[in-house]
Image 1 (cartoon, rainbow over the protein chains, first blue to last red):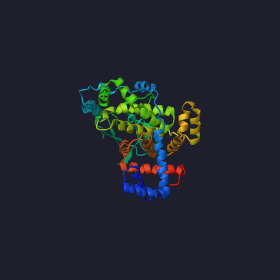
Image 2 (image 1 turned 90 degrees about the horizontal axis):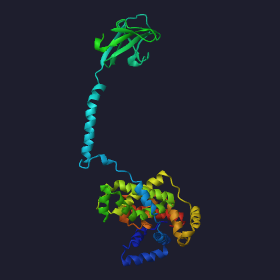
Image 3 (image 1 turned 30 degrees about the horizontal axis):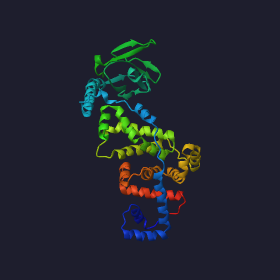
Image 4 (image 1 turned 180 degrees about the vertical axis):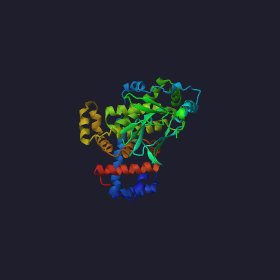
Amino acid sequence: MKCKNVKLLQKYLENQLSEKEVSTLQHHIKNCPFCKNYLKLEEKLEKLGALPHSEAPEYLISKILSNLPKKEEKFIPNFLPKQAFVFGIILIFMLLWFPLSRKIYQKRVVVRFEIDLPEAQSVAIAGDFNKWDINKTKCKKEKGKWVAEIALKPGRYQYMFVVDKEIWIPDPNATDYTYDSFGKKNSILDTYVCGIRG
Amino acid sequence: MTEEEIIKEVLKGNINTYAEIIKKYKNYIYNLGMSIFNNYTETEDFTQEVFIKLYKNLKKYKSNFNFKTWLYKIAINTAKDFLRKKKFLPVSLEDHKNLIYSEDKVEESIQKNLESQMLLSLIRTLPEKYLNILILRYIENLSYEEIAEVTSKPIGTVKTLLFRAKLLLAKKLKIQI
């Protein structure tokens, strides 16, 4: 059981009690098993300091010295504060990024594809721009025509219409045509030639 | 050379002067490691890690801080990492007895301190926050103020932790408190 005098006991151990308080407490300790045992444990703990101290072997010094990290920041000139260095890096990054970003964010153009196939159940477009995936660009029926609009980066693309998921046909309105390695006629879209088709 | 002068030299890139710091403090750290881990390999790794961390952080040292306390702070944090990472299992009392008797050279002195060695083994089985604080207080003889600085805790918390640690220890010793 914890004793209510435990705080006094702590002060006693820290020599913070008056003579009168000490004598009252000592009287209490004689009759309190908690305080008696607490002091016994304290005595045992204080003996720990007398344990022989372990000494580090001498070879440890050279081992530590040889394992110290090499100064990495050597390439930062000493006269430059770190902030200036960081600022420099950001500046270089921005300078590099500016022309790059123009390429990456080149304006896309919206291209409209149309084909007149009233009998078809479904029409899709497959081409360079969607890795010839027949499921990616599906056309919708609009006033009897199959229509799709795609935003593309300016460039030259090959493509074909895929009717009912099976029949591949070239775009009758294409700007140009070419023959692929299977001997099939592919339509060509050149955004530089036609701008926005429609 | 004073400590501050040594640190300035080391920061200039004169690594050899760092040996002076290691020489001066290695035994404190090694002893702390042995008290916590009771294992030579672990303690050697620990000591090395502490001095490498100290070296890396030397430029952050401010002279208004006591250097030794600052070093202990690094050491205690490193010890925490070691205990956590390697999940070091404290040696049981039985293992400890075997360890003691197998070392003839130190047998005599250890025999004399058997009771203290046993107590230390028990302390090692306590949770890390109690283990560290007891070792700093009773083996490294740090004051409450120093322990507060080392552990970044208010003095009141340090005292409470010590008190709880002692209650736990008493329970393990089957002393009725």
